[in-house]
Image (cartoon, rainbow, N blue to C red; front, top):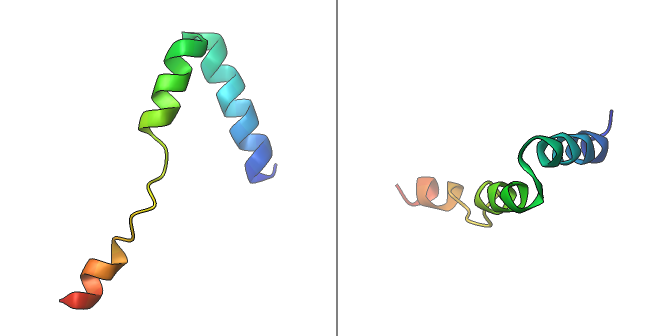
Length: 44
């Protein structure tokens, strides 16, 4: 499976289990951040 196929299957199953509203809330909270944590490591 490709990453896209896994993501689509996961969101489909999640939506089936907890509903569209809660699935959207969950995905927003779990969204990867654009923050570059490695920049802090380089400073030290």
